[in-house]
Image 1 (cartoon, helix red, strand yellow):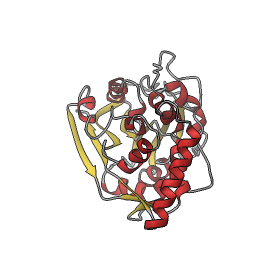
Image 2 (tube, rainbow, N blue to C red):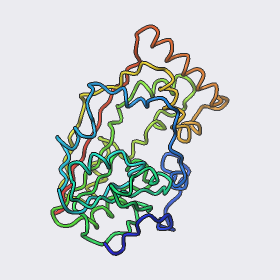
Image 3 (cartoon, rainbow, N blue to C red):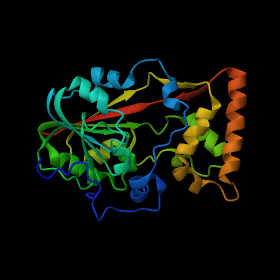
Image 4 (tube, rainbow, N blue to C red):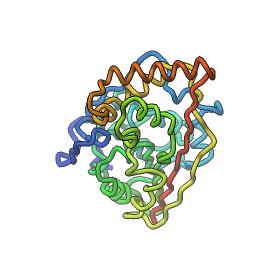
Length: 282
């Protein structure tokens, strides 16, 4: 662990690839703000009601009570408190390319590391579990990150990679396309999904299994929360609007559409289908 540079913002790989696709643009993700509107996110409307992070650790993800756990691409640290609860003696490493996101994580709960997942500042065979939760689709070349996860895992270690089906949240994609979105794939890059993930993970891991989770949906009652989600994804969505469609016009049309649906039906329902890949290192 001597190579782990904690709480620094200067350890990102200098050769990290930059692509023209905003969804995987590493320079954007180094400085992306964590939006705050005062309203709940659409994910707080998830049904059935349960503590979903706790549920994941109780039913699908096994952490060592002691040992080393890497939360790769952790963002503002949504999984850290639940991970700390189930692994009180573990060393938790919260790693993200954006030092600004790490500022939201309590230093007492995790070691904070600013770095790119394609160049981890960690020793070979030094980690017991890697969590890659809803993040690999932001990596320009996924096999590079997968190879790094394999390198730092010890023998018997496990990578958990959480993602979505390409069919998930189709209602948001339909809204986007209906009001000027030129490419529904902008809603979520399919280059790491339930459908495409196995082949990418098998570039380094020989033991890969997928569990699909289909038992939830987002039952949103406030149209502004749907608008907030589009605003959060503006960096990825605006470049793909059809020519002549202004972002503000798209937002206004979406707001009116969702408001009409909520007034008619009482809710705007968004289907979900997640996938948890489990990769074991021999």
